[in-house]
Length: 271
Image (tube, rainbow, N blue to C red; front, side, top):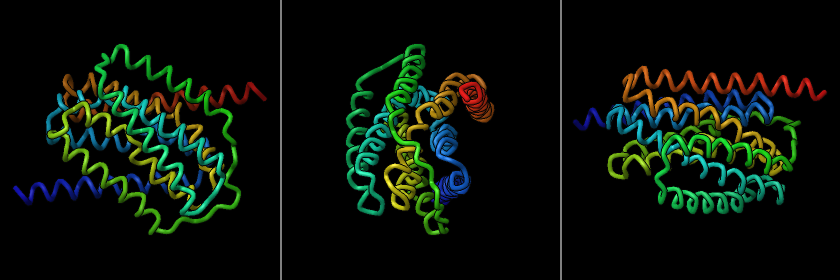
């Protein structure tokens, strides 16, 4: 039994680390807009759903995914606060992350508690979060589009820092799922598990304006992971863990592909 638990924890950690390292390498080579949209990939959420589904069953995982949908309003609170504080101070280095991190985590905690007091059916939470994504994107439009001109190559130490932070969060949330229940599993998974380590490294390495330029593109990208949650909420109990998860990732890919196409067409028309 102990060996089985140890093997599961090791599998969670290795898969989480591998995915976060891959995302980090991709994000380092693309612009702020593409890096922001990459957060729409259901990485942390997907891994929590898969591991929770294996350990607690597809029905439990589907209910957790249901609660992730309104839970992503807490992510929006986090990125709005972090982006605003970082841009206003426009500092870089280790000390620069303290004020925006403290404010954003406090905002997330308050929002998470508020969401935990609600029981919103998916038929209402889905259009509700869609409106919030658009509204948040408009709200953050004032933030700068400062590109990263002089790129700093991140070493493997930095990559492992990102990966270990994300892996630790995923292992803890999925392991605690039975004790905290599907609602809090969903809400806690909505915390930017894979995004926050990336935010910290970019902010430490560059300045507040650069990280704000990435964060302003996150809200509409989150439609991908929300599409994943919506699909697995229906798909897991009906199709089982494997095919329900495949359906979820397909929904996320379809959203991100459609959004990228519409965005490209819109920019070309605006020229």
